[in-house]
Image (cartoon, rainbow, N blue to C red):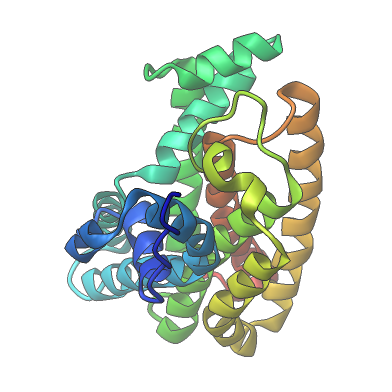
Length: 269
């Protein structure tokens, strides 16, 4: 008779989320056994928004700090470089793969094959370049000098909302039959409890932003909901569900949605 698997320590899910979404080393996780890691990753999804909040704090601190000594454009570019190093350009890679696959693939098999290809094509290069450029311009459009508190809140909330959108997408869109990464490994195990946990870990950053700009957050939630409806329909039609790259694309889009809302509603610099 096989022994029962060891329970997942309470400290494991948030640290697994940190390890999954960043390049921050977490040596203590080496203590976990294989089944504990698998079970812990399911629970870790609910901690994604909090990790996003921490990433956003690093980015916001870099933008505001560097802007004291450098032109804003330079400060934003260096801040994005720091963030890319912190995250391993995790979601940027997904944006490129997504754009290549759905831009250049016509059949389901084409889309899956291109998405798994590590090379970047014209659709991926253009899509990633435009996405990063748009994000950089939106960050430069925030009131960095006039209202640094709102600027910091918007940057942190955008990073948090991005990861919260991933939690919602995993709950609403089944993994593709030939999916890869997080969507394939634990997508079917995401439950309402995971979504509630994600909402709780997202609350501090989003509440702080709502206190400063409630209209922008409301617009973000509405636009994010519309985006999820479109993404779900498109993915189910094209490849039968979601993949890790599709979730990463959704996360990056979530950041852009919140920043667009903050700038469009008259709070840009």
